[in-house]
Length: 136
Image (cartoon, rainbow, N blue to C red):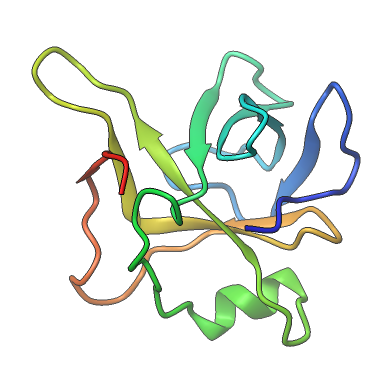
């Protein structure tokens, strides 16, 4: 994965969602901060509401067959001009007997050059909302 590189530093990478992520009201501005040296796990914290935080990860090490068909409209919103976006997925923490899961149905797409981002819901039922998170 090519991780976003705009405004990287101890405060993370600033991302601006073209439309607010589903369920997060009118929040557009976030900071993406790596939690590990390998760049696989991140926090995504709202700049407008700092108590709002999600965990995201690079799906490749955990879901090597994850090759979602990305919506052309979502890609156009990012202004990628044919370049591939960085694809991250939201992690839902474990709760009791329920393991950590990853939302493969609605990936977060990032233009690593500009920091533009969008969370898109994929068509069809090929990818689950809560895929158990296990090392591949």
